[in-house]
Image 1 (tube, chains in turn purple, red):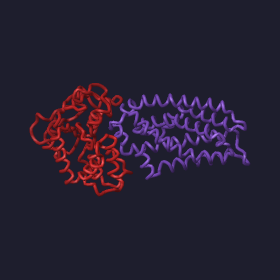
Image 2: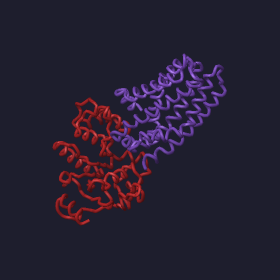
Image 3: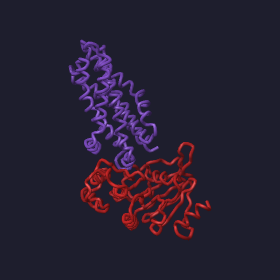
Image 4: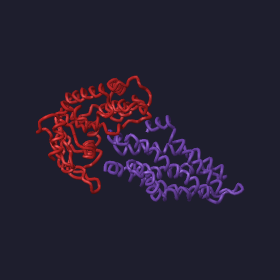
Length: 216
Length: 231
């Protein structure tokens, strides 16, 4: 992960492209869903999570493209490090990158849609963290598996979105109930619990399948 | 863990319907350099990937002494691989690349080991990203990366690619050193003249099957041509 951060710090390629894409996404939707300063109900929650999912897909693709170019993922697989540990390292790198994106995009969504996204910072932060972990856990596994596939850019979203739809729905619903005029905290906590459940399932499955998927 | 031999027994590998390796069996001992020859697409890189534990055979088995590839991390720490792709990060300097891999392999005294490796590669004065190096310089760096942790089994895929005459001679000398140190060296190459006299044995992969070239007389090039013609 330290090596990934050093490379990213030098090139700033992934963070800039991902961030630009996420902000552009929010701005385009803002023009569509905000009329005379009033946003469509629940639009802010949906757009926040769409921006995270789309930019996350972009980040996953670019992160592994870097490993593909010199086949360095194989070099990592050859080291005596436990192979699931390689998955965890890559996942942490992607999560850190998405955390940076979310830290910038969330206030922009709050501003553009006049949404009280920061009214319950702890719960909102937990929803974002749990949702991002679930999305990135599946995405990192698929991006690693597709690194040698010719049509990986097309296949990644096709495989990723159907499986992560429960995570995105739970994230959107959990965020939406926090943005209601009277926030429904118990329901938000229920969606958070569902997200944590998905995280546990996805990470367990990914750790279990990473090595066989990468050596076959 | 350590081992003194590498044994392929009836190793078969299919990619979909295509059979790339068909019941390949041979054994390499410690202190031996074995040249793996064959036309493009003959399965040399596939066999090296199987030996490196990156690919599982469809049938048959590979043994490292008494151990199998399921030994995992302990076995991988004794294998060094120079692939056709060089496995180096172009954004990092030669020093940073080697430090990263030295730590990943748990090498002791990382700084001294890496500096020695850089001197061997003739790259001790370069602190710019490896992506700016010539192919030959990257090849030398990749070779040092593969040998950094003093592996028992050394797998080299086209190690002479991009090397100038001086670097080629240095690599020949290095191979001899590795043999002296008791390494098992398995190298896939098309540079027959270069390895003639360095390799102890040569095997030819053709149509997925393995042909031993040791029983034939003449230069490696002659033996290679005759074996290809007769097969």
